[in-house]
Length: 274
Image 1: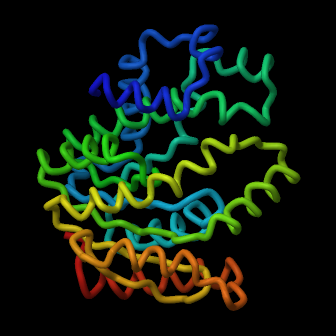
Image 2 (image 1 turned 45 degrees about the horizontal axis):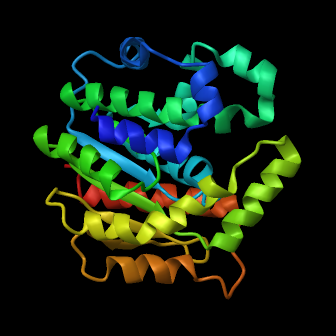
């Protein structure tokens, strides 16, 4: 991984006190262990250069709506992807219990985000180099991050579809607060705000890439997505419109989840993954 990318991750998600007290000098070795664990259960010969990217702010429904729908699509196509999400790499931190004991469970994710995202990117590199199908549940980051990801995809002849959950900031903030009251899980204002600050530059960067891809824009206020492409000159405007469609009651989450399953099942039956 490029040093500039590591520096970005540490600057955006790191905690200087955590980094000094609980340094991880052997993250590349941990990445190999994590990679081997993730692919151990996959069928032999599981090769398909395709990446499904799930993007959206906290509370938009990436884990509760999109992930089940995408899992359903892969099951129907008899593909077994590697599922990469930041939360999956937190347990690999060698000082996890010490961080938990000193700072508490509610700050565990916040205090390990930089480590987990760095480890995820290293495992992503290994998956792409070996051409595994991938579900990449990492929301849009800075153009520096996106450029690294797309250089890897392009070098290894990957197609990449985006499933974007557009959400207004007030809805995201309300969900984060509801989760905090229920679980005490803390999300710093810096992290919560970052998605909205980087949305425009990251989408503008995506419009410059040249990969076979589609861009699905989902809103909680309508059931079917706007299916576009990264090269759509109105991509940013379409995402912004969907993000602010909140002048009517939102659909219930189980309805949103099931309709995503059915829509994506029909779509990929007619338009194969690659």
